[in-house]
Image 1 (cartoon, one colour):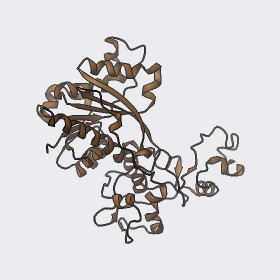
Image 2 (tube, one colour):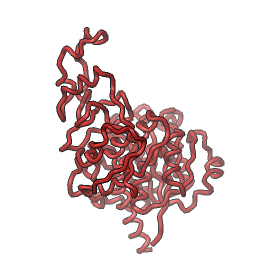
Image 3 (cartoon, helix red, strand yellow):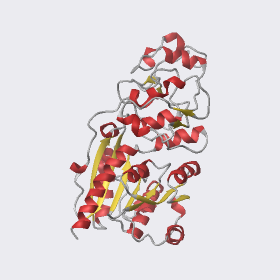
Image 4 (cartoon, one colour):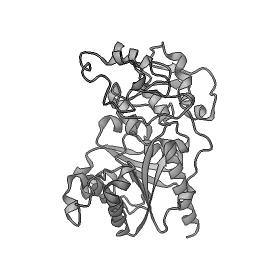
Length: 367
């Protein structure tokens, strides 16, 4: 059976790539301007070429020098910024909009490789903002190149990820429109408890590496386990005492509203108290539910551990993003949190990749 290959643009640490690898695709290259993210990418996709570069500096010659002629690339995936498209950006003026520059750099790779499939991930607001103008333009741009465009908004928690994370995907193919019914959802939702409970006993441990000794209690825990049962990127840090005291009053599923008023009346907040706070502030995760959306912060994150008065560690956040334990992160702790928070959950991506693979194999058999 043919192995299909792909290039990941704006790859970050490789969340999209991991899902495609899990589905049996082969990575040719990952490109991103973040050095720590590319170091993580190269660690896990060692047969691919990781390129740390600002994609806007890559003309056709540089692309060919780095990656060759791009012939035989089956799929291009990535998350190019699309916010520059608006009703004001019409005709050739949109090419000069710096907010659109990276999208058209993405298209440069599409034009060189002419892949069978393109997958673009972005925030769901891209579909509705400015009356859906971005969706319209992206569709027009690809239809000019004889691609068929469909889009779908997906929640990662429907695909075995213990997190409510909603993203839009453009699935763009040569030939027929992609059939969204090919996407297979998980039978059951995975909870925060399944993702994190194995790590509870190690709260007072400060070793750089810990080893899980008990057997996995669920299919998701079996999926997460590394071959040697080791856990990395689990550096536990507690916030300032006042933050610990505030979050100690918040029950699972609660938020800042559960904190007593007097705990907000510090020298910095005595005038405003606890007003003007977003509902996600001081949000404590619920063990029997999916997580809120994992963000790219660390000490400034808005979500807290369901049991302990701290934010999740990098490893705990990674488990909530469906990264297996053998997927470890390079860089400073801040850089690691950024990589995890910016990633696309691999189990969500895997479902998309499997459906695409099924379609490509069907076309191959009918040639």
